[in-house]
Image 1 (cartoon, helix red, strand yellow):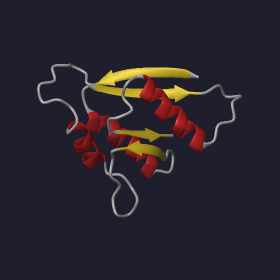
Image 2 (cartoon, helix red, strand yellow):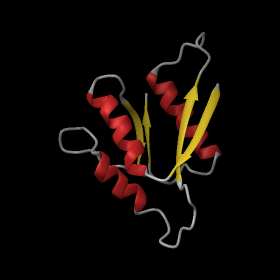
Image 3 (tube, one colour):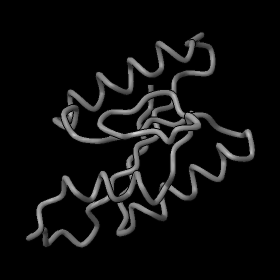
Length: 106
């Protein structure tokens, strides 16, 4: 498993990028924590951003507070969506981020 970690300034930008892939059928939401879905079962990037930002301290001085993590299993590994969601959850728990809002895309 290889983890690619990048940081950024805009949570909304990262969410819009991934949500556009979902809307085009090129990605899916595997798991969420503390994120509400709309009544139609989908996620709204702006609403998700608001929910994540609500958890950030008001006095944050970090220039790039957004973390995007891409977990990439070996191509030979056969991992179903449930296993991948569990791996993502365990990874975030191990990093100390398991109790805050997140969304996992595939």
